[in-house]
Each structure stands twice: as structure tokens, then as C-alpha cells.
Image (cartoon, rainbow, N blue to C red; front, side, top):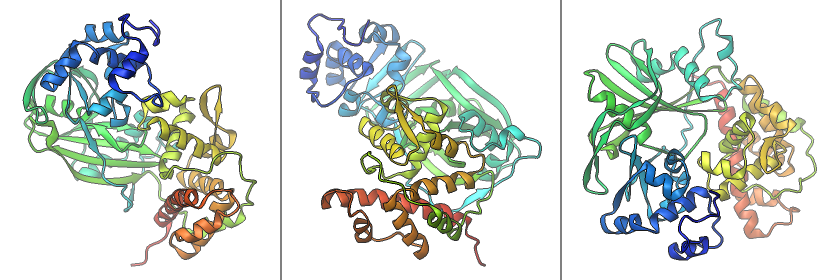
Length: 449
């Protein structure tokens, strides 16, 4: 069944839009239509009456005409369907054949970007395939964290051995949902563990991602934690690992009340790398001054404040070309952000649209395939300096050791044909990208004690 075919004759797309007050400006995907169909019937009435409902996988597929696992895969709050975001809904599997949908918050925000020390570890000699920092695979990142002793250093524990991984059942759990005021029985729902590492005292359960996001689905940590916490005497430690641009971001969590998934608390966080940085402010300033600015591209001036996420998107499309819809569905971007960040990479000459999918340009691929993070970051700084505004602001900021003022940035944007109001908004992007450069080179600047 195509996305434009309704299972009920009376429910055409326009009627569904009218029923749920979906603005015409909102582009709906196949999952959006599927959930609107479900909520247009008895399930929507039950949601209104009780605040939640149970739906079988068979019913979910019958009404939505979509595979249940695709309809229920919401790894980030922004990956939820439009109606879920509007009504603040969440979905969790309660068995292999049934789901619970209701007004409860499944997501935990990561702390604000951490700019502190990057701890450096080395891999054991001879592990040549793990020394390639240009690889962005989640599995390789997890293997690198394990082989380098990163988990032991982060947790301050003895040697850990890989013991559990892959898909398995939750077994039987009783889960408290405080937003609904009910306890829910979970009976052998499917879950997945990216990596489990064990010692005499600990079982460390790691969820690994190769893309940056603002938040994550607590279920990814909670179900594995509960399965083993109920059956082991040793301490079960949930850890979230995010790998991007040669940096491992580690977050340790705990559940203060094991029965309540909303009792999650961040205990510690740290950043690691598998090689030290030697790219300091003077080296970056030399790079900037050596670049001859290119003509301003026929692409809108960037409006994407996180340069880390521009780089991360480049990593992701280097693994495989992605359409705007795929960027939105798989990663923590809403449709507008997907446009902004893809076009930001395009503005720098690092990405381009090819047959409705985004791919790295030759320049972008050369940048992302640099085997060492200093070389990659130097290449990224060159790409920034190739744009006149960024070159001027970077030169001024690196020489001072602090980001240029908003007034100075706006003055540098003169000649771009932007209104003052637009220039002010775009100046925020210039300042944030410049701050990324200053943070990056601060890591490589020797400290005097």
C-alpha cells in the first residue's frame, strides 16, 4: 500500500489534516500518516480518555500499513512523528507483540556541551585497524574504547571483559510510569545491547552512537539495565558513548529507583581521544593566513550554530548518501535543521546534493578521510578560512584568543547583501563556529604549571 492510500475510505489525507489541525506547511512522512490513521479511530478516543493505550503489533501494521519496528523507532525526541511531538507521546514495547503509547516522557537531554579536558589514551601496539580515526562506525568506536582501557579509566574500575551483546529479551519487568501514574508489566520485549563488559564487581552496559544529538531514548539504557540488575548481585552501570570527529563522549548514568525509568541521573561525563592534539592557536592562525579566500558561493549564508553537528553530518553522509528525509528520520534533526546543516556543509564546499541525496564533495571526502584528527581539524579550518567572513573573524579571534564581538562580525559581513536583522542572526553562527576553532586549538596548546 502506498503512503497516499487510506485504509478507510472516509479518511483521506486532507480529512486527517483537518481532524488533527495539521498545517499545510508541515510535510508528513509515511510514519506520520500511519499514526494519524491509528489515532483517528478508537485508539485516539482511548488516549483521550485514559492518557494511554495498548496496541498489538498486528493492529499497528494493519492500520498503518508499515512495519511496527519502523513505526516505533524513535531514538530521539525529534524523530517522533508529528502527532507524537504535538501531543507529547511516547511508545515502548511491552512484549514482542504489543506496544504501549501514552503521554509520558521517554527522553533525557544530554548536558550542555562539555568543553573541558580531553583525556588521551593509546591503543595497544599492533592494532592497526583500530588506529584509523577517520572510521566513524559505532562498532569500531566501541572496540576502540574497550581496547584502549577507556571504560576502566572513566569508571575507575579494574579490567573489564566483553561478555554480552546483541539482541535479547528483557525477560519480565515491572516498570513504573510516573507521568501516567501506573505500573506496566513488560514481558520479554526485544532489546539490544551494543556492548556489555564485566568484572568481578561490575557489569558495564554501553549504548554506542556515531552521531550527536540533544537527547536520547531512556529505554535504550533502561531495559538492559533492568534485565541484569534484577538478576545480578554486582553493580550494573549504564554508559552512553557518542563518537564523532575523533572524540569519545562518555556519560555514566544511574537509576536511583530501579523500578522508575524517570529516576535516571547523570553521574559523570568525560571526553577521550586515541591521540594527543598538537594543533595550537599559532598553528591555526598560520593555516588561516595561508588560505586565499574563494568567491562567495551561490548558497545561503549558514544558519546552523553547532559546527560539531556540521562535521558529524559530513561523517554520516560519507558512510552513505542520505536524503533529507533520511537525515530527519535517522538522526536528531527536524526537517528545517536537516536543510540548515546540509546547506551549511554545502556552503563550505564539503557536501552537495546528488539525485535528491546528500554526499560529500571531493573536498569533503578528503577532509573526512584524514586518518588523524589534527589533520582533519586543520582541513576543516582551511575550509572555513576559504570563506572571506570566516577568514577575517578567525584571524582576529585567534590572534586575540577570544571570539570577535557581534559588531565586528556584522561589519565583516558587509557586502553579502543581508539585512541588519539577518546579519545579526547569522553572526551567531559565525561566533559559534569560531568558538569551535578556539576550543579545538585550546586542547593542543601546552599548559604551563
